[in-house]
Amino acid sequence: MQNSRKHNKKSIRSFVKRSGRLTKSQKNALQDYSSNYILDTNNSSTDLKSCFDSKQHGVVIEIGFGDGVVLIESAIKNPDKNFIGIEVYDSGLGQCLNEIDKHKIENIRLIYGDAVEVFEQFITKQSVEKINILFPDPWPKKRHHKRRLINKRFLALLSKSLINKGIVNVSTDWEDYAQQIELTFKESNQFKEIKSELRDFKTKFEKRGIKLGHKIFNYSYQLT
Ligand SMILES: C[S@@+](CC[C@H](N)C(=O)[O-])C[C@H]1O[C@@H](n2cnc3c(N)ncnc32)[C@H](O)[C@@H]1O
Image (cartoon, rainbow, N blue to C red; front, side, top):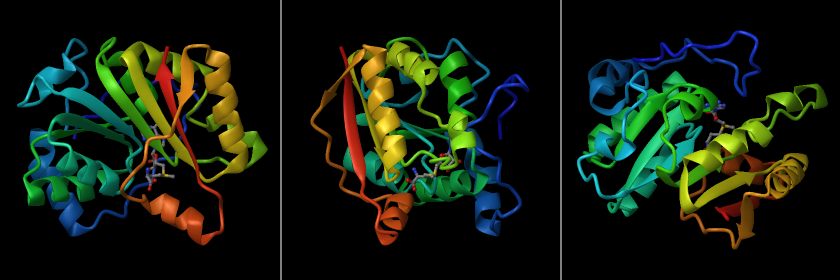
């Protein structure tokens, strides 16, 4: 699997690497299918559309897809779009690769890496129609808030990658993260809030939040 991207040791990451819990089938999937579906992000001049068979279709990116259930279902339901999922969680990548192969899905590619670096170094300007960030790690302790993915710098990266009137969908079940998300988008002055897009499928972390009695906050923002 490719993940040889340069990384500044001092940068604060939005994740802690989980490892060592791969099932046999996830391990096999990573070995057998990575070359077909995982993009080599070391080639920084790649036109995203050229990564797919149907090159004319718009690109939708899901950041932190976890087990990939929503990514898979979205790709099956929307054959007229090309989907890219970004994750750092090996088991999730393995699970997702197995599903891609099982359903012979043509319109998904995966990236193994930190979304911040991927947007900084790989995603080309004005190339993405939509970005979905579903239940990003909440980092609930105050001293960890600096690890939260959604911040001013990351929104600036996302805005560069979006096409005109491109959309970012964000969901969280953490109220104070929801407030931070609202404020960060508002202060960026590059997005306007629009009616939240409906999702057909609940993610694993959404279900977990609902079980815990958390309110779900769904936001959609459009590039102005
Ligand atoms: C709370 S989980 C949510 C997973 C899934 N979206 C869901 O709702 O079930 C957050 C996911 O984001 C991934 N993640 C966190 N920071 C990331 C980053 N900088 N780049 C890529 N993935 C990241 C984590 O590995 C984790 O799988």
